[in-house]
Length: 435
Image 1 (cartoon, rainbow, N blue to C red):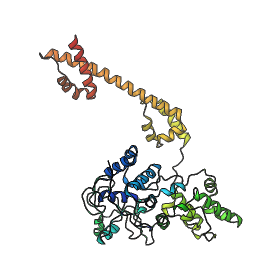
Image 2: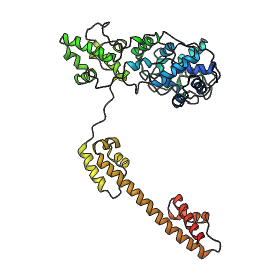
Image 3: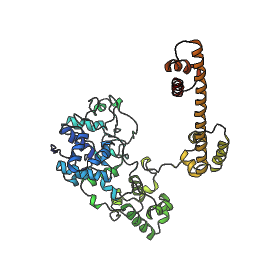
Image 4: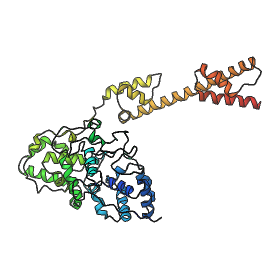
């Protein structure tokens, strides 16, 4: 099959309002009158990546912005099919960050998000609607322009917008066709989750980073850039005998863990390091502090924003208490499952298995043995109940016992599972027929 796609112009190139590759791909499907999944299959067949199509289609289109090897191959194939330069397509993603930071878990939202005010204004100006690239980052809860909470569901039918189904337009719900800017005219429908009451732009560092990428500056991002910038900032503080001040807000052990590559750096971690050291996020990712004032930043004495605070660690397990509880569980004649036991003492099964692997294995074995014994008891009880029922049937009735009749007689009174009774009745009547 030959793929001939109608051209689509990428929007917002060179600005922080740049379109995400996911939005571009959905618009491409709208213009060509086919579902995104169908377009994906066409591109796969033309470019010899058909085996990758199921992997891409198994997740939501929004995941195309993530820096993965699979997405990089898809970008190359998309460029071949649309004629859009692969470097331009790369500006509509965060793929370039893969060279700089180690992991991306928790940095990207799992669903399409949008600002209803932006959608409404774009539609009224007769401009093509597009979903901004930075809307895919979890660092944003509100629109930086309108301070409106970013939405994930249709304001009328409550549907997510992540399916691969065909669309009439990008600014309408994929299910009911309502404009996604509808809640701008009806503020009471706006989901307030994540609302931040502030007038300053939310996450300005991420806005600048997005603009930096959209302008085609990804080549300036250096592998392991945050650690290199951290070295420079640390050396400068050391030479000025300010390392004690340096370690007040960036604990020494944490700092050394980052410097010696023992601790992975995510986008969120890089933002936190930039805030603490007073180095702009883009400079930090480029591995340089040369453009900075090289003075201790006043932010060091401020509290971290909530979005940058490290997640609180779960409380440590009381090993002695857990060990005593395990001893009691191993003596318990009820032989609970590991899951029930973990819920009972308030410790996860993973935590228990980490500290007490052998004992947890024994608890699981005892529970499985209990299930086997209970199964045998039910079979024996069912066999006895069926024998008695057949005997009573033959004593009181002339017609031979039937499967349905015996089941109807036994199920309400025996208290045994229907599938066990049905299997036992079948065996008993088959044996009787052969005899």
